[in-house]
Length: 303
Ligand code: NAD
Image (cartoon, rainbow, N blue to C red; front, top):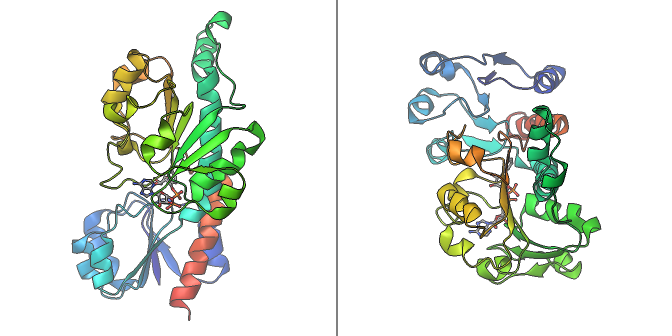
């Protein structure tokens, strides 16, 4: 018997029913009630609202599987769950295309000022002369973090004939090197001559605050930066300063150190394109994730 404690897409509920998997759907349940009933279930599906901490895990006497229907496991005490023999999963592969496509949209939008031009039109302005920007074609793009999303961004950039320099702590796959992707030895090498820098690494102690003034000063071509990865990889104060001083030309952000961001100065700055952490949000991605959930349950609970 399973429990779903966050609001999920209808497709997941339909698939569970179709497979005959029994579950209770309590998307608004509060912590105290969860502690009271968690002992009755052998799997739980959460998104980001429900925090699965030690207190809950101590009561989860029958729990075998925890699934985050989405990306990231920051709301789950994974180590403690593992100590208790509970397997923890998420569904990151499902979202690769969605995030890569948003990255491309933000890249093109930032280069041409689409966001600000749109805001102007909405306010009844006709700022035709204001919006001149570079083409993406033939530019140099640094992709920092060349995992699932970074590689898909590289694929999507193919028709623009850009020069791609990839940096990752893991090896850049040979098939991409053969296609012309340059594997940088260091982050500095990747960013120094980039016109556009796009971030696709996880937030770790090494990547926290990675895009700071020291690194920005090494960027020679006044680049545009795109962050659809994790907010705290970018030092927002340094980026604001760099935009004001013309060291970088602009930034597109889907993610923020604090969400929602309260930074009014950032909001009001030109050449800052912002979306409210929507990278994963396509119909298809959540449908793929729902199928992944079913597979996880079949493999781990049904023999
Ligand atoms: P992934 O694990 O497939 O790839 C991440 C890559 O980053 C790996 O190749 C890894 O080796 C590399 N990496 C780790 N530390 C690094 C470092 N210090 N320097 C350089 N490279 C490093 O992950 P993914 O699915 O491609 O996701 C990438 C990012 O996108 C993550 O931060 C994830 O949280 C984020 N994401 C955002 C959204 C959104 O809604 N905007 C949705 C999904 C994922």
